[in-house]
Amino acid sequence: MKYAIFSDVHANLHALNRVLEDIEQQKVDRTVCLGDLVGYGAFPNQVVDKVRDTCDVVIAGNHDHAAVGIMDISAFNEYAHRAVIWTRDKLSAINTKWLQSRPLNVVENEIQFVHASPVEPRKWHYIFSKDDAQRAMEHAEAGTVFVGHTHVPFDYMTRLGRLINVGSVGQPRDGNPEAAYTLFDTATGERRLIHIAYDVHAAKDAIILEGLPPFLAERLVMGR
Ligand SMILES: [Fe+2]
Image (cartoon, rainbow, N blue to C red):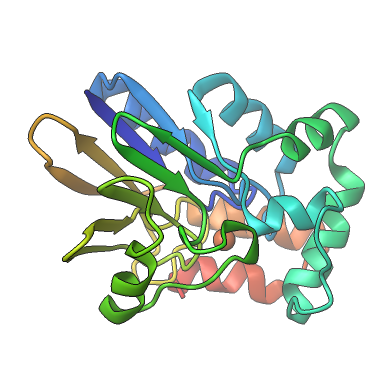
């Protein structure tokens, strides 16, 4: 079975559109979004509409929970905080309700999908290193686990299974400003990390135009 898996769109419609066009060419069986659909970018409703229409599985991320009032945002940094408040105001009632009802964790075909970590999914732990990955896999519910959350792709083979971070569509932080997503074939175990160029400047201009923090626009160009 062929999967397309992406995460952390963060209301970046320009990046999402290009990624979905590419996925369309790949003829996959299932498309999965690992959460953080909103927060930071200028198009929360358009992104939620599009993800709902195109994905078979959609997991909730911390920014989704923050935007729909499920989690406390006092620990968010200034930029994330301002973006959450702006997003809350913009989201339609239907989209708010739909985001509130997304699952934190889905297991299918011996694969686990979760936004941050298989350890206490609701606590949004960060996985930065192979040591973090080893510890996280002790709580895995399948031999292969896909996550997002840090916006930095990785592929760690641990003694308990494989942990893959698919990177970020809408706000990459690995130094490459292109949108990232992952193709995975369950028959061969092959994982392909795909990078897609998109109109970063259009996404950046839209953030400025909406009066969101300029830093959120600038970092798209740097991919940091
Ligand atoms: Fe995120």
